[in-house]
Image 1: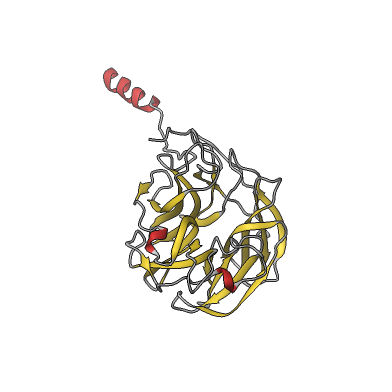
Image 2 (image 1 turned 90 degrees about the vertical axis):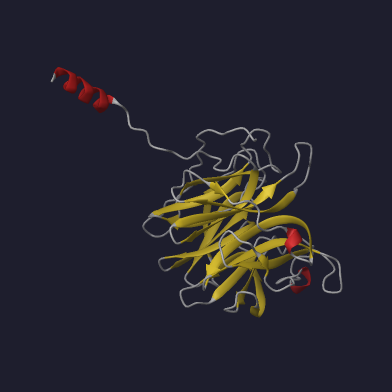
Length: 319
């Protein structure tokens, strides 16, 4: 009896361990521009992939990657099912992108550069790839760019048509938002591969790039990378309609560690809200060797967003 009590006391005193995630959440390669999507019971994370060396002084982004999790702790790497080489009209790097599901198909809206040809004089462009599975394989959905630089003229440079964000409203209407320097939007047809109507542009306060658009309850959110204090911050606006008018609400994320840029990706999963972003906190990391992170996101009773608390729970060496 004494032996059994001793055994019981030993087991009672054994501490219980809870698995916790660490930031950056992807630490075996450099990743950037996170785009989360929930499908069924799984959270899929779509990212860019930084391959610049420590000596490089500009971005080198080889392809777009897919990761998944069912617990926000363990992440499965599904590789790189998409790259600029997938698009016959494209050249250059794999800039920010977003994948969404509609009617059983997965549409991955990407930004890269267009070749100089009879269609475009070059400059940034937006394409769309499609797959029957969230992890691919993906193919060019239309064999041409969805948006080319010549379709927007408010910004007088060639890299303003980047960073697509796609949102499907409750009534089934899809919207595409994008842009550097100004925020642009246009309706998409139900097939998700054609624009409908004319392109509109506007400039939210301090807006730079990287819009992320979503709806929560009866409020629409436009979250974006902003001017900040030279390194980018994240600010946001709200509206009662997906096309505005937008009311500026303020800064929700201050400067990140060791990176000039940051990029928002927001999702609800299993009853909690998450804010994805990137920084440069991995060993040998920096503005051109970034790493995706995630933290909890909290809302006030009136729907405004509380400041994001950036956390670091340890990092691993790049393999």
